[in-house]
Length: 238
View 1: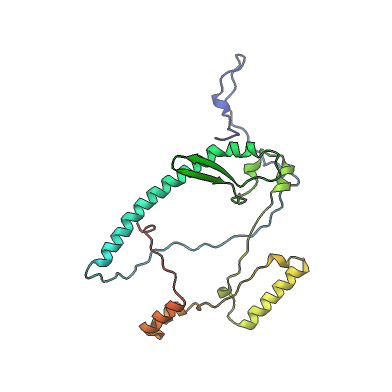
View 2: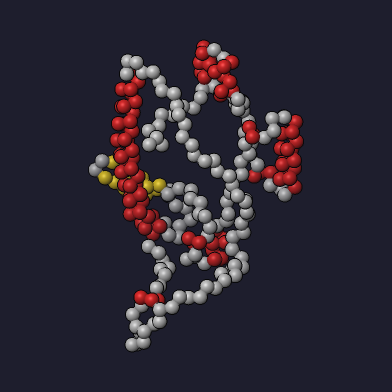
């Protein structure tokens, strides 16, 4: 429900016997930005890859055993999706029902339990309220709060990731770039904001070249040591 509905003056009934004229409001420049508020960083335009459909090779299922398994996956996935949707609806409805009690019973407390228990003949269900919140596009949905509260308890959050495999493949250049990045963050006493994890992974061209360079036995052995991620999906194919 929109808390600030737009009033259409052309449809209002006369007040005190005086009809309100049907007129279009003149275009006016937007009001100046309110002083204060949450300070934000602009990240500019971001590129997005276009979705494309791919033609996949079809497995030569001569004895139809793979087809039987695939059919079971499709049928069971459909039933699972239906049950999962019903479960999500029930959970959302239960949370909506329990939330007023949760906030009322914990009003004014310094330490609060993380969950509310709901007992049923089939067993206990816990409705847990975690310290995780979705990201809002801006503070507009919080307009009902005092701006001072919004500025005190909300702030812009963002995450910047660096794709190592998209950097120049010269280790010396990469090291120089990362050293300068760390120096820059150290200059602003923000080194704790930098997090890094390292490991071994195939290079870009391995996934295609492996079929040309390695034998089937070698590929199977490599896959046992460094398995490719494989997903069985029933969505996304119209």
